[in-house]
Each structure stands twice: as C-alpha cells, then as structure tokens.
Image 1 (cartoon, rainbow, N blue to C red):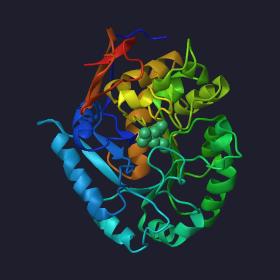
Image 2 (cartoon, rainbow, N blue to C red; image 1 turned 90 degrees about the vertical axis):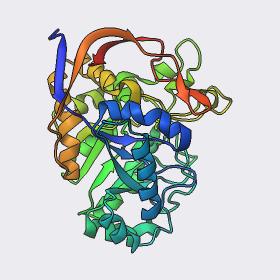
Image 3 (cartoon, rainbow, N blue to C red; image 1 turned 120 degrees about the horizontal axis):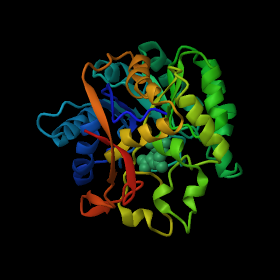
Image 4 (cartoon, rainbow, N blue to C red; image 1 turned 135 degrees about the horizontal axis):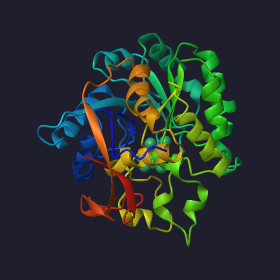
Length: 345
Ligand code: NCD
Ligand code: ZN
Ligand code: ZN
C-alpha cells in the first residue's frame, strides 16, 4: 500500500445530498461546499419540492448559504408524486432541473407524499425519458411483509426491472445501494443505469449499529447490511466501472431526534465526506481509483463537464468534532469524536 503523504484529485461532486432548509441549511451548506464542486440536492423537504418554481426558490436559498468566494453549484431535483403533471417536465428541463426523485411512499424520511404505485407516474416518466430528465430512486419496497434487510433486493424484481423494461431510454440512478444484489444488477445492466454508494456503506456493516449498545448515529435507510454486502459495494466502487459514483447521502437530523425512541434515519457525513471515502478506498488498496469514482463517473453520467480544479488530501490524523451547530439544535457527525486518517487541505 502506498503511504504517500498527500493525495490530489480533480474536485469531486456529491451526487446525492440532503441540505434541509432554514437555519439547518445554513449550518450544513458550507461543509459540502468546502469539498464538492456540485451536489445533487434531494427534494424531501416538508413540504416536498414538487414544482420547478419551488426548486428554483430552494436553489436561491442554498446559494445564499454558500460562503463568499466559494464556487458551489447545487443541482436541483423534483420530488415525484402520484400527481406530478407530465407537462411540468418541460418547464423543469428548461429551468435546469436535472432529475426527479422517486420515493416509494413511506420508504424513508419525508416520503409520505411519495409514489404509491409507479404506474400512476407513467405519463410523467414518458415525458422525462423524452426530455432526458434522470430518475433517481430510493430503491426499497415498503411492503411490511418483506423483511427490512431484503427490501432493496425485492425492489429490483418488483419495481426496477419492470420500470427499465417499460422505459428503456430513461436514465436511472439507483441511489445509495447497500447490497450485493444491487451492485450486481447495476453492473450487468446497460449504461443507462448507474448507482451511488455512500461512504458509510463502504466502511460499515450492520454490526456498527449495535456495537456496545444501540448506536443511532449509524442508522440510515437503506439500513447497513451484512459484511458480504459491504464487500460487494467496495468491489463495485473500486472496480473502475463508470456505473458507480460518489453520493454521500449525508442526511443531517437534530441529534435529539436520532437519540430518540423512534430515531430518525440518516447519517451526517458532509463535514468529512471525501476523507471517509479515501479511508475506504485505501483499505481496499484502491486509492488510485478514488478520482474516477468521486470526480469523473457521475459527471459523465449526467452529461456535465468534469471540474478543472483539484483538491488535496493530507495524511494527517485529526479528530472529528463530536457535534456541530444545527439551527437551534446540534447535529452529530458519523464518527464524531474519533480519529480520521486523511484531512482535506
Ligand atoms: C434520508 C433523509 O434523512 O432525508 N435518510 C436516510 O436515512 N438516508 C432520506 C433517504 O435518503 O432515504
Ligand atoms: Zn433514500
Ligand atoms: Zn438520501
């Protein structure tokens, strides 16, 4: 393994990010903007971002939270509902919206307005396919009969495979994949299907949730899986395949709502995202593959230019803060209070 003291790469992008709104937004945007040139911003606010006008207003609020002198471009998405009108798609496309997000109703945080039956969205999906708007999916079924740990694999059979047959030209991102089944499915599919992988799913298996007691800051959806799945994700991310790219799914919640009888799902990783990915890639002996995964594959899939500027990581041990201000609450980053091996210069 190389022990070079620095690692320089083309500036990366985050292809799956939650920024929230209001004071929380102001607290987290600087962390992402310090690392990434662009980010795909998830629309699961309350109320959800369902129209082009709402997305543009949200984009302006994000821009206000970017520190002066920092170049950061939020890429906006709309929240797909059963009632999203097909004719909204042309407006969205013209306004620079890049994608729609499919949340199966009830699958995750703020998904109650999500899609109850994918067939209800078919006219809108046809318009998206024609206009080259991407479809981003939270890939879990919500059927209570299906074991929580199997919901992603079952989603492939029940929803994703039929959807791809019906819309062969639609570009789809299977977001935050967590299983060997998903990695294999994406790998064997054509170039219109890609996947994002989080740093936490590369670093941890489900044991992390229960180490020495229940650990709510490791709880996200889709939930961490067995070690075989983590290993499959590491293989996919470090394979060099352009179908896999960086998406932190950094999803901040007030700490008191995670340390709670029914704690919220979502891990906060934005402050140290690229450092966490570097650690995962280094452990796999694949640091040389980090740049493609973090800076090239996503841009190429979305048809956007790669960045020209670079970032440098230093091999330096430092302690991640245990908590950070988050509006009138605090947010506790994943790995807070622990040591990291790399640090963004
Ligand atoms: C996300 C959130 O909090 O918005 N939570 C999560 O556990 N990943 C929602 C999501 O991406 O599913
Ligand atoms: Zn999700
Ligand atoms: Zn997410």
